[in-house]
Amino acid sequence: MRGQVFTIAKLHYINGVVYFTAGQERTDIITLADHYVDTTKSGDVKHPVERVRMLARFAKGLGLIAIKDKGTVTITNLGKEYYTARASEKWSLSDNQKKLMRDHILSDPSRTATIHAVYSLLDLVRKGHSGDDLTHQYAVAINKEFAWNSEVTYTGFTQFGLNYLEELGFIKSSSSLEKPQVNKEAINKSSTKVNTILFTWNPNKYKWQDLPQAIYEANAEGVHQRSWSCGVTKNIEPGDRAFLIRLGVPNRGIVGSGVLLSVPYKAPHWDAEQAVKGKEVNRVDIAFDVISETPILDEYFLSTGDFSKFDWYQQSSGVRVPEAFVQILEDAWSKVTGTQFKPHKPDVSSTIYTEGNKNIRLITQYERNPDARQECINHYGLSCRVCGMGFTERYGKVGNGFIHVHHLALISEKSGEHKVDAIQDLRPVCPNCHAMLHKKVPPYTVEELKSKLR
Image (tube, rainbow, N blue to C red; front, side, top):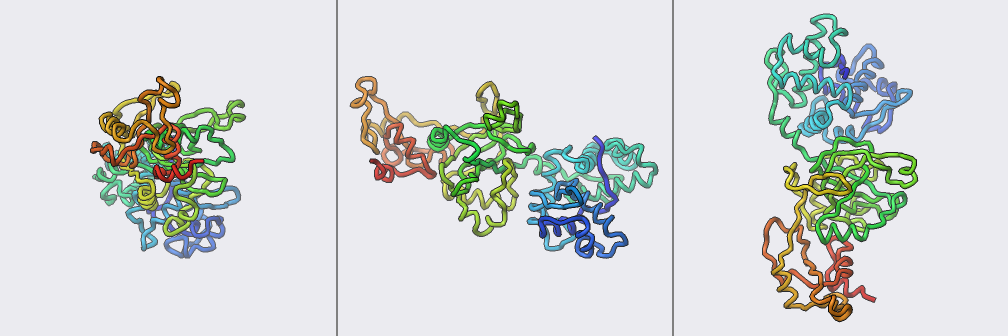
């Protein structure tokens, strides 16, 4: 793959172009050049259009802006994150910006020719190359060995690349070609990062036929596994966090959460008519631990405070939630649902098989205690505590001893082994009422559901 390099000595020189574009959301090269005092660091350039165009191409190569026909420039989702994480000093990079870009580069080193060039140099430094050997190996790695026709060119572009690596925190110093030192801690932290991905569901386009069953499995049994479209996003890994937002119908908002079980793969289109035509989409497997028929975090909530600073209603599924919003999202979600997500990239503990596909099970399955179940039944009996139905009375001998036991507190809220108080924590309920109890998150209380009986 051919790498793309620029005669730009420092990465932070792009900040003026990126920040101006973020403020406007849509602009163009000429407008950026007209505002060269703001969009270039020196604020005084002889050929502002050429300079701004190069800065914009560099920013585009890093994924921060998009350049369309006729020079139209727009900010990308990554660019919005980069702008939100900016330092107080315009011409520098904040720690959050550095981490954001490190994660972006390491998640897909061949994403663009520019990122390929940055990563290739990092890879060579990690392998111990330095001095003239580094400059020539770098030219070969990005297919520039015939384009760079002098030692000055070799050294110059390599030095620019080392400057970028130092600014991003990949290496400790770029001042010498002889012994550049890799910042292993920064690389390791970035390579094990868990991303938070926002998936979309529009009921007007996709009819979720088994939604009631999915709600029951996720909320009562602890997991509902399902494949879901991830749009054009490919940098998704098993163990990443998933949230599901409902669009297209009132009330919009976040209705589910879970963990990723797979990397993206091609599968038939979710629309049956498109699938018949052979159309495919990128999909991932998700283990949902919470699903609700109505939003748990609704439009009003998502429009308040810091939540209002992010566009939650993007039509494309598979959008990464900016790191600045992840913790406040998790805190709010935990407070409402009673669940808690602990980021990790765990080892494979067991495997499950669904429709011929092997997937990694990454979430905990909580085992029910049979002794506690029996103690509950001994105390409360075998009749449903909501509707009163007894299976022996309804079905005769075949129904003897049958009843579900409902945990008043979600069992998945508990951490590891815990003692269950059969009298305080459990209630016998029939399967229908058990499913209805879990129609929302947190579940209805037994008394609430009993009041809804007709």
